[in-house]
Image 1 (cartoon, one colour):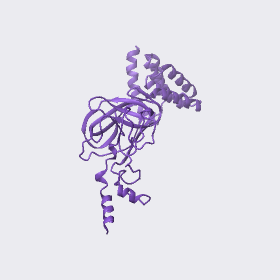
Image 2 (cartoon, rainbow, N blue to C red):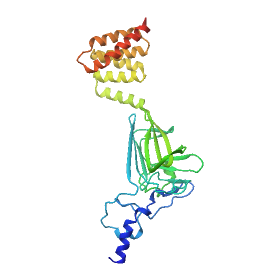
Image 3 (cartoon, rainbow, N blue to C red):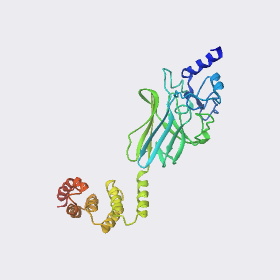
Length: 326
């Protein structure tokens, strides 16, 4: 093996030690971004390679090597809204991160390699700020002694912060960095997930950033109910299901009554009688609620598992509502 061959081989095995691509940053607003011309966008190898290897392997087959900052995707449904974060996860590797590998007062790609992407299937609010449905680049602007910012940028084809332009920013979301248990590799994760909201968190080293994502789920549900009922007219079960959702979520009792009355007109079953009983009880009409509960118990079949599962609840309601009605 000659000297040049040995040098090339050593460069291949030395890829891991020199990979620091994820620390690439761009100055925020006041200073034009600086392109990192050493980044290599090859797939299957770490993105920053020694110049000798990069030039030697141009146009050549690539070895299937794991990336220093592996690809990750996390997704969460909040109500009817799908939220997805697509990123690469750098590691600490015994280095100082905040204020060093990731400088303060510069835009950071919030991951490694390509820019981190966040996608919303429907409009959302981020810490109270409106954001339209769509896909965005997600950046972070860290500061040494004040709030940090999550930044959503409309350009999704950047390599990290190359050619980042603050004119393309859609929203800045101020967040306070929190102390965290040590996390070797950068991690995005969801918490406090509820029917209409949840928190998206970024944890790396000993810091966590968190922002609240809220959705207008009830408006979306009501629109979806109306559309489905229009597409499937005369379906007593869909009407009963729609009324039940409104009752259980204390929404629009007049609309719920209209739905359940139409359901009962189409088919007088135990299920829709029980839903109407609950609706009437929520309006403190306990006397009429008792009538519909007794009717539901009479109509239910002992061979119906759903009915058998609800019998005990209906009998408890009878006892409670009788005490309130008389």
